[in-house]
Image 1 (spheres, rainbow, N blue to C red):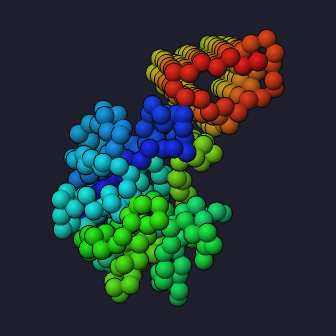
Image 2 (image 1 turned 120 degrees about the vertical axis):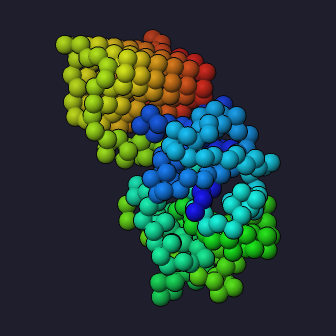
Image 3 (image 1 turned 180 degrees about the vertical axis):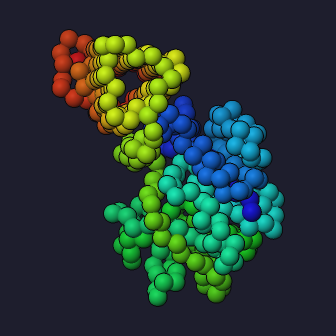
Length: 353
């Protein structure tokens, strides 16, 4: 079995961060989202991986390389434009050939991994295995309608969903999917929809099996989902200290302090992670916060937030529920609101009144 990882989207819902950074490389608990998927693929015993890349190809290549750090062999597959998931499958046929494969959306996180799904696919030999999960807003996703436990119909982002079962961003296929993606037409939004391709398999009486996710799944395309994924991953992490904490500081709960990080006269309450060479001085870092490498927090408070690399936050009374881009500076000006909710782009500077 091979894997096809989609990393070609523009990430419009996370702008301005994604104007200058691939959405799949935004860190969750100080690790790029894409890396979680690659780890899951490797743990499932898959070695050959094709990565669909677009405008951010250079960044993705620089971060992933050959894939050897995970024991993978990576092939990059350029996509001229984000023309739909089924289009990504279509252009990957020369790489996949006749093999079975798992398709994994590079900005998704799946707690339970892929091992059990791959095993079930190999045992039951369907043409496709799709993952489903109940969601509050199914109109934002591909939606599955089941009848007697079987997949009856799929619809992409319907205005009036027939169910609350959304398609999770992980799919398993055999080579019959290539006939499907070559048979369907673009949707109204000009994309080749994977839901249409799977519906083609259903209409042709092929075997499409549904599997409901038992753990959690997150599509991290929106700020709130990104922060929630960060919370979920940090909640399961074990604390460790590879940096330095002075005697005037307090570390409470599960906190990861990476190499070279310094905690001075501060309180860090976990679950949280402080990245390599980061500095926390006279500050409070609350639960569910990730501070990436080389960032500095001084005379400030922050919680339930993500701070990217090389950023500075200074003299800010309170930040929460925020995503701060790389190389950003957030500093206080004379007046002090009690809380801030911020999403700013890379290399930005914000003076807060």
